[in-house]
Length: 104
Image (cartoon, rainbow, N blue to C red):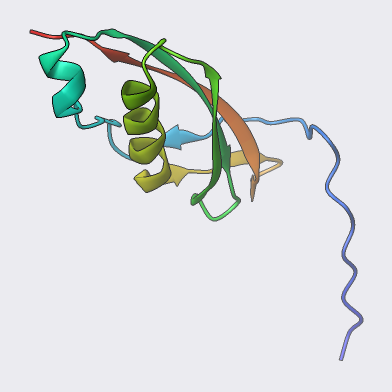
């Protein structure tokens, strides 16, 4: 059996193609936020594994409304991504995504 070598991933590998959501991320508008007419943008930092699964989501810039921020995080955690690529291989990466909550 050949010996398996595992090298620590570099802090920020050169990425040829960034990760992208497989379908649009549409968070559910929280009922309470809707009733209070809360709107805003939530900027998320999404850690995407080489498999395309979301491993972690952090609110980078909040909307000012906890319910909107939580809804955005829930939606991002449930999303599936096409992973980032480096030298033709899928790699773990971090993406920033802005979700906008706007009442119609």
